[in-house]
Amino acid sequence: SQTIHQWPATLVQPVGSPLSLECTVEGTSNPNLYWYRQAAGRGLQLLFYSVGIGQISSEVPQNLSASRPQDRQFILSSKKLLLSDSGFYLCAWSLDGRSNTIYFGEGSWLTVV
Amino acid sequence: AQSVAQPEDQVNVAEGNPLTVKCTYSVSGNPYLFWYVQYPNRGLQFLLKYITGDNLVKGSYGFEAEFNKSQTSFHLKKPSALVSDSALYFCAVKTNYKLSFGAGTTVTVRA
Image 1: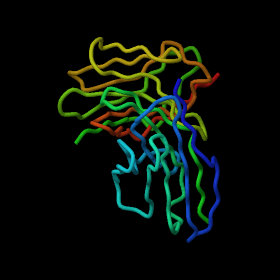
Image 2: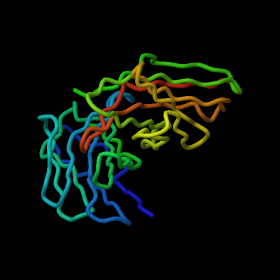
Image 3: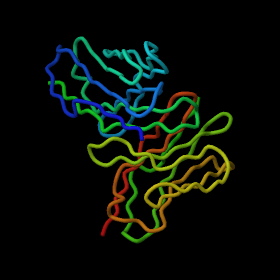
């Protein structure tokens, strides 16, 4: 069966510091990969998605970037964090195809201080 | 643009009573609709989806949802709610690669 792991689970970073959140999927190949952000415990915003290695689509302009160096690895980065980057970040995966379900990881809490 | 709306921020029910969480959609073409549940400080868990076929979809943990094309609705239901069903519920529509979510409904089931 497929599993998704993301880490770290919790992160406290000062303003202006870099960020790296990692996500890996096991048990499948060539998945679609996603990064979502949830602010204030409610709304979910799609940040990036990837349909293949090196293929990244950005949904909103922001202080963040994403990379997919390997088939099942998805990394969310920032060179300099802002206070507004605080939130709950969720990695997710799916098989290709509109009818396929998107499955989420357990999330990473980022607090920028 | 494809979107879903959850008209209720909160739903409160007594344990053992029926639970309904409302969702309406605005989609051009055939809608691909999903329900997820989120417990505090956790990721989203998939409950069920409607792609095509029967309008009544059965999912995990005793939940079901009814797709109604004429009312453009996809309400989540559970015949008898449990205290453990207290959580945040999201309706979502999938277009091509992406899920777009409603604002979420907080469900509180009191003992």
